[in-house]
Amino acid sequence: MNEIPQHVSDDRSRQGCAPVPGAPVSPLDARLSMPRPSDTPESPVVNAVRWLLAALGATFAVYATQLVSIAVGSFAVALVLLQLTASTDAAALAAQITIPVQIISELAVFAVVLPWWLRVRPVSFLQGRRRIPRSRALAVVAVVLLGIGLQMVISYALGLLLPLFPDVKTEYDTLTDNPVMNEFSVAAVLILAVGAPLTEELACRGVVFEFALRAMCPKQAGRWRDRAWRTARSQPCPPLGAVPPRAFWLANIVQAVLFGALHLNITQFAYATVMGLIAGWLVWQTGSLLPSMGLHLVINFCSYFVKEIAMVLEMGGVVFAIVASAAMVGAGLWLFRRAMGRPAPLP
Image 1 (cartoon, one colour):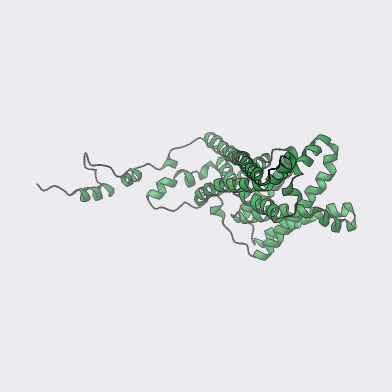
Image 2 (image 1 turned 180 degrees about the vertical axis):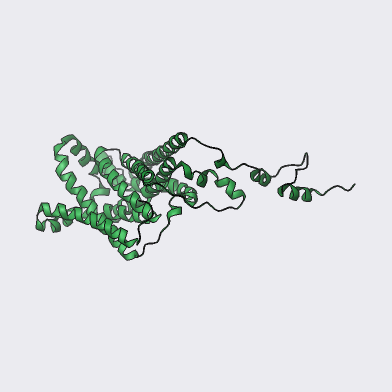
């Protein structure tokens, strides 16, 4: 009897025929024979703990990257400056290395979080919620108005509350007394108004928010658990199912708190958490990180012009300025929803 050619045998195996005993199993056949991972039940508690730890781990990875890059960058830049200037003034040297080291730190974090987000994004919740604003111009105006309003509300809140806590005020004043936050220069603006929004939004509203959503939405697990299984069969990612408002807000709170904690001091933790909540809402409405990056950029850029903006607002008095700042926040949120047209089905 004639033997069946090996390639015919392999084709029959892929079509459901019994494999030939002793025949080697190809990597493709191995992947095709895998059961679908999401068919194996997983406890919602286990899912939540696993992904909350992942969110915490992502936050720590960003912090560790900052810490290592600042340490290595400080040493390297200091060596270069010592060779170029031969200065032994420690204070002057510290002032000179601040901006170069911050640039190194931003680039290091960007190099870590961008590939991470690009890996996560195809099966992310945001990818399933992509929406184009009905009016892009109105959306931009809304984000600018919201950013200016938030910056001024934060500034007035700090001005009223920090004097009540002298130690906290001293710590905050020391922290913000650096060239990046005090000097309006091209390098400082690139770090504070471009680098920070880009890296922190990729990390917190991108990776961390995605992991927090996975923790709160175990019924959507097929989107990420079955990724390799679908890829082997060239199947598309399933559509995003309903995400309860409660799940969104819990995930939004988690990412906002971790974003606040990333700043490592109580003052910035407080206002960064509030900003993170609003940025997370913008991202959820659009399925895009661009609005939150824009908001972050406006807030940080306006920090250089707080006195000038306050001078204009306070022409009507301090109370008027505070009310006007809060009104800008409310108007920005309202205009953004108008710009998006019909509200998203969920929050």
